Length: 211
Length: 211
DNA sequence: CAGCATTGTTGGCGGCGCCTACATTGGCTG
DNA sequence: CAGCCAATGTAGGCGCCGCCAACAATGCTG
Image (cartoon, rainbow over all chains, first blue to last red; front, side):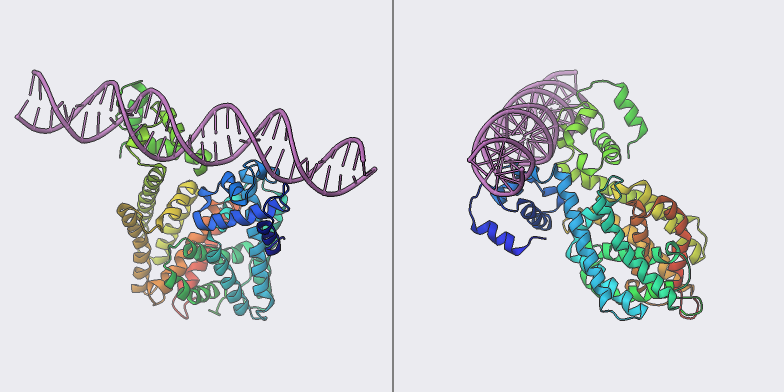
């Protein structure tokens, strides 16, 4: 992953024929634009102008606009997976704590990356999605599966297949994050309501007689 | 709402200078295109060609493309509210039955109108959304509030404010519908998993000691 | 250092959204 | 019922866009 260094280099060296790392620069600038003005307003030509290259230069790195959006979605999945994995790393053992950590990580990511998330979700179910993208989504869904099945092993979560137990949990998590990210839930309620949502999920997946 | 009659008329009368009901025809055709090729592929000029009018004719009815999308979203909200209201009309009294009916109605709508739903959600939180649109979303969220507070009155749902009880329920509902609609949940799992999700929600909002 | 794949440039094509000026229509009013 | 006017549709043009093909600079590799 190329980062600050690359960007600084780009800006200080005014005009080489070859840019250095145009691909990374395109992705970085595209994400900025996405945040500022939304997906619809993203234009390859404008991107090229911003970076001081010709209007056809981006095509050397992304065969068309969709390819750039796919690459952005992939970045998003990698970032999301990292954030969620980190949340589990230092959350202890208790299912409740781990669930809390994951919910906060996921909701936080969705709030910080709302537009990117749109991209990620609108692309993933395409059957011809790239291999890397499929792998990224797999790694990520696996984190939830591990959380749930660990909870089952320790008796904190009711028995049942992942489809039966994990799906409702993830649906709740995803639904809440989406409501918050799209602004359907006013921000002040969204922040305050997280604990209640976690309690709701815990009741929903607790073993019988242990509500 | 103008419907089949209008459309038939449009097709049989080949070329009047005035179309008759271009606005309704635009909305109808736009929704078709949306279903077939997605939001990004919707073009006012193509729409006009399809309907046999000049490329600038649509501007008489929608000041710009966004206005047409807004109108489509409004149609979507009206349709969703109707479907959900109908589900409550003949669902009996029991909270469980009413919740089941509403979940099926909502998920069914999302599966049938996935693209429209995208529009609806991407527009609603715009602070300058039209009055009609705001009213439409209000009517619809009210249906959920009524369901929950009725359940509280009859003792089937735990006490607490709508934010505390209704939001988790709605988040689960919405999340599941979204996962199913975007294809993240394979269709066969999506169909089969509904009952489990409903049970999850019932556990989540049951009064204490009544899981 | 010669050759070649990579990367960037220039120019052009058709389509788009939106604007302005103009044409036709049908309903309202005197 | 005549004439006028607002509503509706048309014609053309502007500047953007994505994509393509032909050409130019670069730097890696034998």
